[in-house]
Amino acid sequence: MSDTLPSFDDTTDVEDADRGFVAPLDPGVVAAADGRVVWDNDAYGFLNAECPDTAHPSLWRQSGLCARQGLYEVTDGVYQVRGLDLSNMTLVEGDRGVVVIDPLISAETAAAALALYRAHRGDRPVTGLIYTHSHGDHFGGARGVLPHGTEQGVPVLAPAGFLEHAVSENVYAGGAMGRRAGYMYGVMLPTSPDGQIGVGLGQGTSTGTFTLVPPTVEVTRTGQEETVDGVRILFQLTPGTEAPAEMNFLFPDRRALCLAENATHTLHNVLTLRGALVRDSRIWARYLDEAVEYFYGRYDVAFASHHWPTWGHDDVVRFLHEQRDVYAYLHDQTLRMLNEGLTGVEIAERIRLAPALEKAWHARGYYGSVSHNSKAVYQRYLGWFDGNPAHLWEHPPVELARRYVEVAGGPAQALAKARSYVEAGDLRFAATLLNHVVFADPEDTEARETLADVYTRLGHGAENATWRNFYLTGAKELREGPRSEIVDLANPEMIMNLTVPMLIDSLAIRIDGPRAWDEDLTIDLLVTDPADERHRHRLTLHNGALTHRVSTAPRTPAGLVLTLTKRQLLDVLAGGGLDGVETEGDAGLLDRLLSYVTTPDPNFPVVTP
Image 1: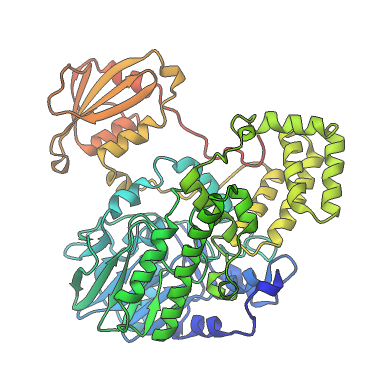
Image 2: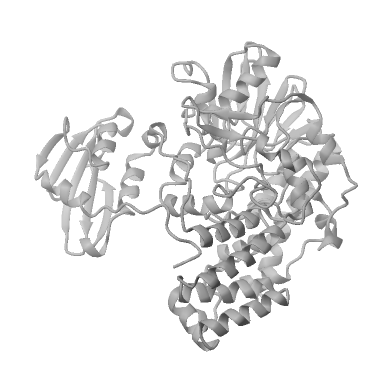
């Protein structure tokens, strides 16, 4: 392992992470109005010490770099606040005020970042807001820089498709994603040398108020130019890369290039461990290559929505070429090997980056990994099935586990055999075998504790931060049971930006199908908001499936017609009743529909049945 690591004597990243430092937030703690701490960067002070044996030295180095916090000058008139959330806030000074790029996750951390900037650069008003892409850590703190009543006349720029993807990403599979995100970011772990030490992309996620100010200017093409508060901006649209809606952009008068989250100081995720749609690493590489050529010669520094900038035109070109090559290589070599008959697991075990890429710190797998990214490429093209009929109709985990334990000679012998693999240093198979013992009998405390110990050792040895957090959170859940702290993304501004079809989709995925098998009802929604143009949305519950369509002249009448605003619709779907809603037909149909809606438990078990 160590022979593939870059040289720890290379201090370029340390110098770049410290370059331009103006001042820290002191103390590095952000609290909500009620006193609740939503961000504590000071808790990572232990990273200043030597790496202990409970952490991979490469990940310890990365976490120490990410934990640096404060206001930094990138170049003349361009500043970043780093270390106050998972992401960075960038501020570009204009003629009258300041243009904010990516206002973090929470309104509280965003407000603290803006206050830190103003304390050293003057009380400049926010005269523009830019979202680089559609992930929540790049817009959730919007109200911290544009409080209600201050957004009038302030342009808010975002890539085409931003709003749809921003508000829908966590709707359909939001429950499972949120639960797994708790594992990925280690939110239940102690911040300590043997616990959560970061996530590779930053130190963690703030837990304040999640908000959204809708965009007013959409970037629809590469080459589009906009001027905000006297600041010229040239855009490159990069859809389908790190996010479905994303963009790079150049400040030609400052010779500064923003790379959004398309190129950071880590190998990123083709598929996040929390779950998402698989990203297209082929397109990702192609847009990075386009960025090199499109902006060539017009910048002296490149910065991103995470980590620290890269200075020097040629150094930026080399950085982008290496980032491009990583994603292209992962894509192409996975395809080469899957076409030779290898499965995703086999490819993940065999694939290795070129030595020059392995020696590049920014290509190390702190957030994504070569292993799970190659599996993601396989999944994108061939799906979950590896072609082996033995895997086509396997038993579910509990039934499979009971049979494995029986084959091993029973629980006691299976546990003894697992311990022999632990002693032999084969922690990977020990985890597999112990997982079967636990699933066969989740009340076996000895097996649970042994598996927790194995997960702890695997976590402490992981270079990838999200693998570490998964292993350590799994160990914690085995010992303490399932519980989580899930960030509330259901801010009213977010919900109001769901379209009516998306709201109905979010209802449809919560219908208890078997209970509704024999139901047959139709409800029409006439939503009167101007943006909806009084479309008639027809909902049909039939054979356990809730479907909908826009119908201007339906062939048959609905059992119930509701004429209402979008806000009233939100209240109705939340079970608030029909007060103030115009109804025609059988109002009892609504109660029947809502009676089939389930409410999932966000604390479902992960490492036990």
